[in-house]
Image 1 (cartoon, rainbow, N blue to C red):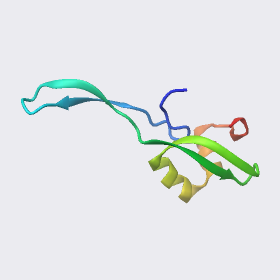
Image 2 (image 1 turned 180 degrees about the vertical axis):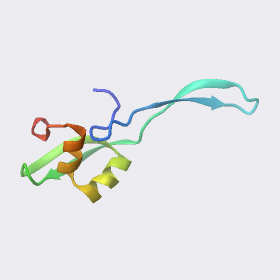
Image 3 (image 1 turned 180 degrees about the horizontal axis):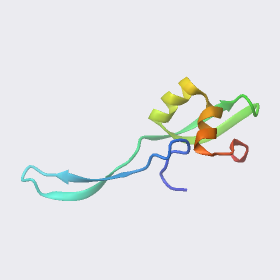
Length: 78
C-alpha cells in the first residue's frame, strides 16, 4: 500500500528544489495524508481510510458512500 489517498487517488508529485544559485535537484511533494476513522452509516460501522486533507473536507460535504462509489471502492473490505 503506497502513499496514496484511498478516495481521490492523490499521490506524490515530482518537483525540483531550487537553491539560491538556481541549481535544481529532484524531490517529491507528498500529498498531506492522514489516517481517518469515518462512520459508514450504510454499513453501520467505522471504516479506517488513508485520506488526503482535501478528501476529508470533501467527505464532510458529499458523504462517504457517494465518494466511495465514484472512486470504485467496496467499503466492506476496509
